[in-house]
Image (cartoon, rainbow, N blue to C red; front, side, top):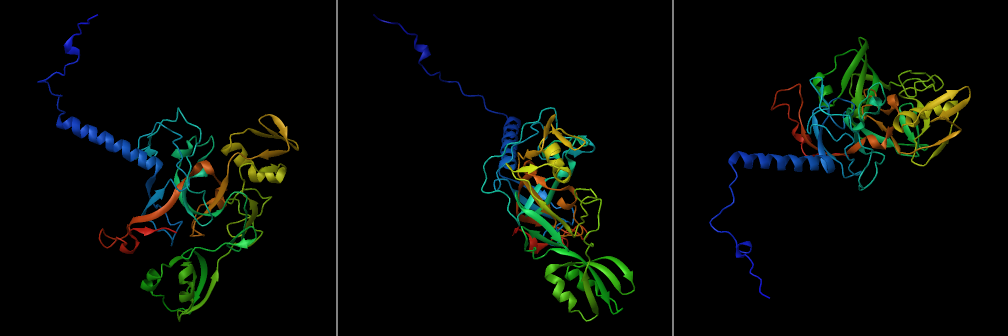
Length: 370
C-alpha cells in the first residue's frame, strides 16, 4: 500500500528567519535574568549586610559591610514569598511585602549548625508576637555572637559568660565599661582614638566611665596619668526589669544572670511557675501554642499538662560591646527559624564621621570575620 504523504510536513522552510529581538527586549531579558540569578544567590547562598550600630564594637564597626553565608547553616527558604527583592521591609512607611500568604519554616541542609563563638545574623525575636504582626523573615536584622547552643546552661557572673560551668573565651576585641580615675591631668584625645576608647560619662574632674577594648586594657592601665581602672559591674542579686525574663522572681541583670538552660528540639521541660516564666515565650510565641494558667494548673491548647516538649532549637546571642548591646539578655533566646546565616567577610568599611576618602577603613577591606 502506498501512502502519499504531504512533503511540506517534512521539508524545512527556507527563506524565513527568526524575528530578531529589539535592543529594548534584549535589555529587558538580560535584566530579568540578572534579577532571577541575583535573587537565587541572595536567597540560597549569601547576602550583604551593613552594621548599623556599635553593639559588636570593636569586632565589627558601624559602617562595616559584610557578606553573610546562608549555606553555612543551610538556607532558610522564604516565609513571606511575596516581597519586593533587595529592599527593606518598610520603605517610607510602606511595607514592601504582602503577609497574606506565609509559608511554614523550612531550612535546606547546611554545613553545620551555629556554634559558640560564631558571629550570626538573625531576625530580631523581640518583634515576634501579635502586637507587631511582622512575619519572621521581615523582622529587623541583627548581628551578634553566639554564646550558647541548644541544651547549654548559661550563666553570667560579674560580666563573664559561663557555659555549663566553664568560662567562655571572650572575643579578643570585645569591650565593656570601666570606672577610670586619673591624676587630674588631661587625657590625650588622639591616644584614646587610636586605642578605640570612648568616654561614656564623667563623675568628677578626674573620674570617668570609659568603654575599653579587651586588647587595649593592659596598655591603657600603663599610661602614666591613669591611677585606677575598675570594671563597671551591676551588683549580683539586683533585679533589672529590662532584663529577661522581666520577672522579679529572677533577680537578674546584664552582668549577673542565670543559670538558664537553652531549649533544644525534643527536650521536655517540667512545667511549674518558675519554668513557665522562663519558657512561656518560646512555647506560646515562637512555637505557636495557646497557654493558660488557672490556679496552679497549666493548660496548653486547652489541655492540662505538667510538661512541654520543644519543637525547635534555641540559641543565646550577645554583642561583643557588652554594655552597649540589646541582645539575648533583654529578649531571651533566639529560635532557629530566626537565624539567617553566618557573617564571613567584611568587604567594605567606612567611617561616616569623616569625608569619603579619609573615612575608608582600608585595613578592614576584604577581612575574614571570626
